[in-house]
Length: 108
Image (cartoon, rainbow, N blue to C red):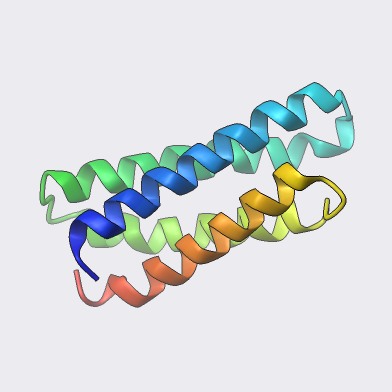
């Protein structure tokens, strides 16, 4: 996959995580703390991975692996709240991003 497409997908996933965090925060449900934490962590890792790729860092492959793991973790947690559209959207974006990271770890 072309680097710009990967970068765009990483930023899209980060945006979905931010949206999910904001929506979860409005729920005022203490059971969603882990979901919100994963949203924040996943967003940060996705953005950092994209930034490393943008500057062709030799460390991008390390972050791509970490990004895959964090996206899987976030997708799994968000999937627990399947009645909430924002969690479903985030889970879907994170799953796609994790798959993309997995496919491209060795290619980068």
